Image 1 (cartoon, rainbow, N blue to C red):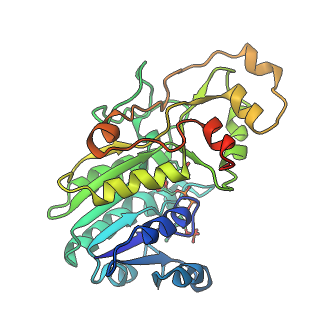
Image 2 (tube, protein in one colour):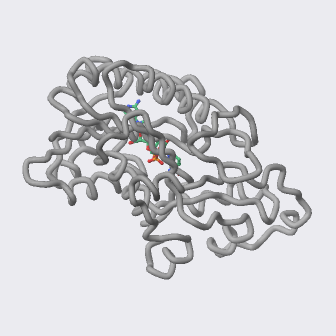
Length: 284
Ligand SMILES: NC(=O)c1ccc[n+]([C@@H]2O[C@H](COP(=O)([O-])OP(=O)(O)OC[C@H]3O[C@@H](n4cnc5c(N)ncnc54)[C@H](OP(=O)(O)O)[C@@H]3O)[C@@H](O)[C@H]2O)c1
C-alpha cells in the first residue's frame, strides 16, 4: 500500500505525515508532494518518498500518483492568496489530482475540506446532511472552491472519494490559536469558533483513510467545546477589548459542527475534547 499525501509542508500535513508513518504496517509506504526539494528532506528522513512539483502542473500529478493506492489531498491555497489561486489549487488542481488518480488506478481518495463549506449557520450544529449554503461572514473563494472540489470529486467515476471537513485546527506549536485574534477581536464576546487539535484531526483523517466501505461519505472532525471570542483572548493572554461586549453575534451557529457521524461510524473520540484539555496536557 502506497499513500500519496499533498500539502505536507503546511500546518496540518506536516503533523499528519509522521502519524501516518508511525501507524504504517510493514510494506506500507508514504509519498509526499512538496514544491521545494529542501522542504522534502525532513519527510525523506522519516522514511517517505518525495516528489517535487506544483499541484497545478498536470505532469507532476501523474508522477505523484504513479503506483499509489490512496491519496490524501491536504494541500490548499487560502492563506493570503488571490482568489484565482484559491480556485486553481483548491478546486481545479484537486479535481485534476482526482482524475490522475483514476487514470493510474488509485483506489481511495481522501479530500481534506473545511467546515466553512456549510456557509450560513442553521441554528443548530451542522451535520454532513446539510447542503452548502453560501453566505455568512466567513464565505469567500476559499470555502466556495473547497465546496466545489468536493462536488466535482464525488462526480468522478471509478474513484472511492471520502471527505473530512476540518474545524479551526490548533496545537503542537501551530500559531493558529494566536492568529485567531485577528478575527476574534472583531467578534461579539460570546461568538464561538469550533476547533480541533492536530492530534484529533490526524486521528479523524486516518480513520477516514482506513475505513472500508465509506466511499462517497463526508465526515466532520472537531472537538466537543467551541471556544468564544472572550476565551480566545484569555487563552492567548490578550486583553479583552471592551467592544466585544457591545456587539451582537450575527450567527451563533456559524460553522459549529456535529461530530455524531464520525463518532458513530468510525469510532472517533477526541483525545483533546477541549482546548483546555490540550493546554493542561502541554499540547498547545
Ligand atoms: N488549518 C486549519 O485550521 C484548517 C481548517 C479547516 C480546513 N483546513 C484544511 O486543511 C488543509 C491543510 O491546511 P493547513 O492549515 O495545513 O494549510 P497551510 O498551512 O496553508 O498548508 C497548505 C499546504 O498546501 C500546499 N500547497 C498550496 N498550494 C500548492 C500548490 N500549488 N502545489 C502544491 N502544494 C501546494 C502548501 O505548500 P507550500 O508549503 O509549498 O506553500 C502547504 O503544504 C487544507 O486543505 C485546508 O483547507 C485547515
